[in-house]
Length: 152
Image (tube, rainbow, N blue to C red; front, side, top):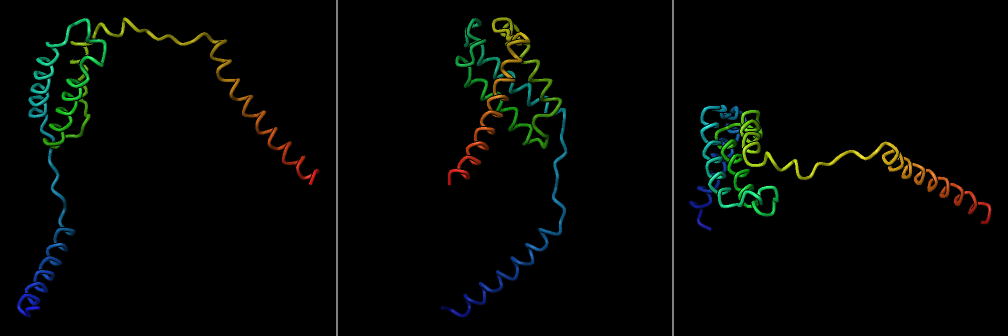
């Protein structure tokens, strides 16, 4: 091996080590969240989502399978822009914007499938049956383990 090349390699290791020490002692540079720029970028994402949703028939807007790609692109756009600007995602400003988009496009969707809590007696049965089955299984295991000691 060429001695000059070996010397050059050693020098590069020394300078890299010094640079690494400086990197670890410096404070990381944090981006400040620019709310105005964030809202402008959210508007841009919303405009693209609106134009994409214009291609979806209004009757199909409550069925996610008809617009899942458009919603994914919108969500990805908001997340990437928030992180690029130096803001957390989601943050209150982004959440308010997403809620406004939901109110605009999906305001009639919750009326179709309203889920209600089951009656109290049904809920009580759904809770107590697994509890009693668990207790019965524990008792059965304990009884069998004591029985096997007697039989052995």
